Image 1 (cartoon, rainbow, N blue to C red):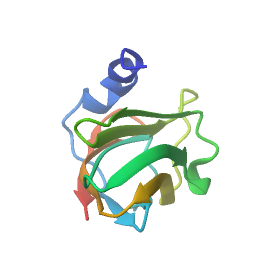
Image 2 (cartoon, helix red, strand yellow):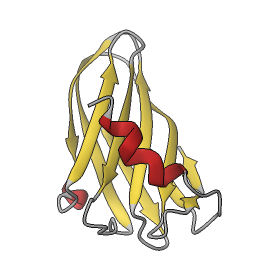
Image 3 (spheres, helix red, strand yellow):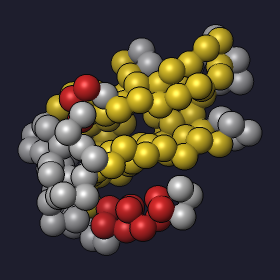
Length: 129
């Protein structure tokens, strides 16, 4: 899967043209997003405290129609990269839950960074909270 992510993320990095801003934020153990218009894909990097163990990352109910939801987790560095997109070129809804993190233990989960792309594979400005 590590070889698959760079290929799937290539359209997210192809253009530096700015489009409609997207907000990505953490709400409990769910990562949510909001955009003025739909985007084609979102990549989110998360991190977590040493007291947490991340068991699984599940697609959010609002992106259930997307056929590409992948994650690469690095337990040693306590980070994960999550990609939500669709090979059929469907757009994400303009808001909702991207994914939920199944975690045990104590500590915080953080959104480290996020990227988004519109239907033309142009980079979209992303604000994280």
